[in-house]
Structure formats: structure tokens, C-alpha cells
Amino acid sequence: MSTLFDPITLGDISCANRIFMAPMTRSRAGEHDEPTEMNVTYYEQRAGAGLIITEGVYPSFDGKGYVRTPGIVTDIQVAGWKAVADAVHAKGGKIVMQLMHCGRVASAHNKPKDARTLAPSAIQAAGEMYTDAVGMAPNEMPEAMTLAEVEQTIADYASATRKAIDAGFDGVELHCTSGYLPAQFLSTGTNHRDDKYGGSLENRLRFVLETLNAMTAEAGARRVGMRICPGNPFNDLTDESPEETFRALIEAVNPMSLAYLHVIRMKAGVDNIALASKFNGPVILNDSYDLERGNRALAANQADAISFGRHYISNPDLVEKFKSGEELTKPNYKLMYTPGPAGYIDY
Image 1 (cartoon, rainbow, N blue to C red):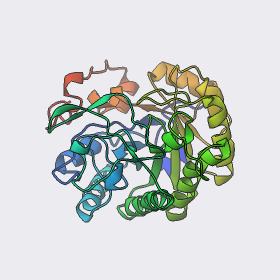
Image 2 (image 1 turned 90 degrees about the vertical axis):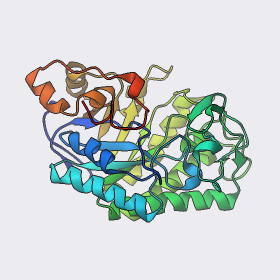
Image 3 (image 1 turned 180 degrees about the horizontal axis):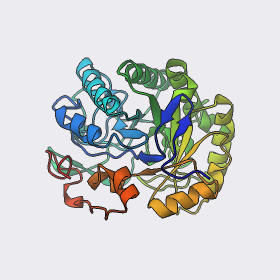
Image 4 (image 1 turned 135 degrees about the vertical axis):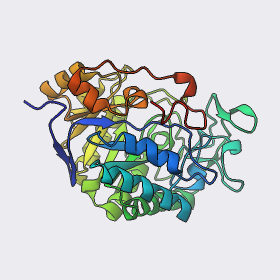
């Protein structure tokens, strides 16, 4: 029977253990949205994880939503990420880049000057987000994407994938939940299109499937994963039948033979663990696990690995602490998104 301390292989990615680091936005990118030496230190400190999944990285300037989040568009950004990957690999770790296009969940105050806020349909998301410029600001009213802009966005994901692999990353993950662009295409509440990317369930799946095909064409399917959370209402996301939507998505994705499926196990009216069982490859589960519950999930064949978020904020040596039974350090949530090293690399 496998435990979290045992090695595992996800597609072409061999991991020393099954204690993974979940993607977490920390808003610490540099002046040009590039990883800095501080970011290199942060990831290097946590290289004992069987696999690190980075914070969400925007694949195009239009895809940026939040303050001080990094991209993989410019040469300086690619160079910064190469330094991150090299540092993690030097410590024996593995790392994949999560690609996150925020779509309508964005403020112009957080974007480069000429960037736009695009979405499947011109439907504004309720809520506000923090900006350094004016404090809290409402999400922008998005522009409905033209067919040409949809195709360009898929090409942006492909380009970002290629740059991540060229920078030395072991793989890439498509962020397909939390109310961001792929989830906006999937969901009936945010996709009111009447072309081939909207309307029927088959059409609403199309953007995600074409994006995954573009990413696998660059990296190989065995280096591409996908993160989902069926029923997640975060960022004003609604769908008439999330269970039907994601069951169909998983069935459509299975023939691709992706490296893994990363599933957030939140209580959102949908049995996400049961849906994850429909995937024909390795499953990573996330959300409020500890060592004991994680091992139980493996023993019950619910998961092949567990990703930890909050624990990794304040315990860069989480694997060692799990092994020794040492008490875990609690994070300072007041410093979660603040600039600078405090609450980031000083644990």
C-alpha cells in the first residue's frame, strides 16, 4: 500500500514523494512581473516536495488579473523562471508551471497599459480585487472575445507552454477552475456565446479541449496536467449542471493521456472525488488535507498524491516535518499577499 512518502511517476514526471506543493498566488513578482531572486529562494526552500506546482502564471498580458502576479511572456520573465527551475532541480525537486488566464476576473489597474480584459461573453463578474494603485477596485466589464481572439488566446497558451519547457520546467498545468477563463467558457452562467464555443455542452467544452491540445502539442501530453473544482462558485461562477459539465470534460480529456488531474476537494454540492475517479490517469487531491487524511485518501484509492497549500506557506520543510512528527508552523495570513520577504521566505 502506497503512502505519501513513496515515489510516483506522473506521465514523464518522476517524483520522489507524493507530498506536492499546491499552486498559490503570493503577489511577489518583480517590477516587470518576473520572478526575482526572492522568488527563486521561495521555491528552492520547498524543493523537498515531490512536485511543486507554481503560482498561477499569465500566458499573455490580457490574461493578467491580480496585482504583482508573474507572467511567461517576455524574455526577462522566462529568464526568471529558468532560475527558479534550475534552483529546484539543483535540490533534487520537480516543478511544473500553472498557466492562469484570469479572463473577466481582472482590474485594469493591475494590467500593463495596453492589455485588455477579455471573456467568452461581456458579463461582468461581481466582486472586487486589490490593486496597488487605488486599493480595492471592481472587476472590469470584459469584452466578448471574437473568434480571432479565442484562437489567439489558445496560441498564447501554446507559446507559454513552449517557453516553460524551454526554461527547464518538468511540465505545465492548465488552471481550469476558480472562475478564470477556461472555467468561464465551460459554465452556462458566463458563456452566452452563439458560435462554436458556446451554447451546447459540446461547444462549451471546445475552448478547454483545444487549449489542452495546443499545450500537449508543445510539451507532450505526459507533461501536461489540468486542475479542476466542479461546482466551485469562486469569482461569481455559476453553471446549471457542473457535474454533467465536468463528467463530459473528463470523458473528453481521457483519450489525451494527460500526466495528471488535479482536483480541489471542496464542498460545493458536487462529489468531486467521485468525478475524479472517472479520470484514467493519476489524480492529485487538494484542500484541507493533513498527513493522516492524505494517507487515508491514498489507501482508499481516491488519490495518487496530495497537494498542500497552506502548510507549505509556513513549512518549507513540510516533508521532513511530516516524517519526524514535528509540529507544523502556522502561517501569518496578514502577510499572504504583501510585497517583500516577510511571510514569504522567512519561515
